[in-house]
Length: 151
Image (tube, one colour):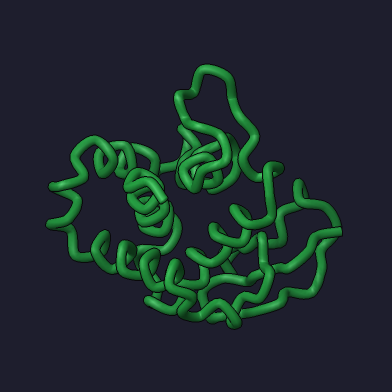
């Protein structure tokens, strides 16, 4: 794994769940890893974006995969700053917690909690209609709902 993959994964967790529990952050890390293991559909290239295909970075940053990387998301400028100055990011306690969650997921901690989930959304949101027909969540961890499949 490239160091940029780990950094991008931690930044994604930061953008998606920095205000939640460490368990929730690990659950999101496992969704990222599940997408990576699931194959190339999660790593489609956008020509000229400079992100190598078939990497964790592509899973996180390719368009419309994780809302925190969408240019119109309020988290996007924060993530750009984190990625621009990664050593400074290590001074951020929340970012370090997200980095720890990513490392724990890479080591297999908590995998059984989310199973093969490839999708999740905040409990405060309705099931995203763009995903298709609502299905029963695989896991409710108090912050997010996780789904193994979508109809």
